Length: 204
Image (tube, rainbow, N blue to C red; front, top):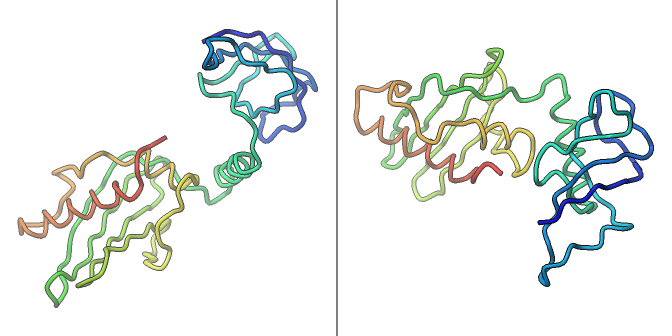
């Protein structure tokens, strides 16, 4: 790893709380190449996640070790989409825990539905629905609001809603959240919750 003091020209600001100079300075730790030498950074186009340094106009501080990334069209589009979703009036709230969960078996063997009601910052309603039908792969969806919408489906990976769930859900269903006197129904609720976690994948 090599540390650089970098001067860069700003071509666009995706999101910021204040105006930014057309040229900025920042420090970055950059991995060495396969030969153990620092990479050539001149004329590279990068995407930065940074914050202004107080009382030092034109100087910013990266938010983390991976906050300088090579610019790619798809990365730019992804960051803009996440930023847009995060700033929307109906943005998905932060998940703080699980309220309650229950499984209702269907009339056929292997059929049933699990609902998981989540706790959120600010108290906005968010719920998960997992539907099982005989001979079919389980399907799950997430509803934002008081009305359960099973047609909403699961969020696409690397979207803002995906991030809220993948990074906010507990790694297992809390025992006190399961509402069932039937051990089989309680086990199904835990199994369906684990299915959602596997479908989301790790928080990254």
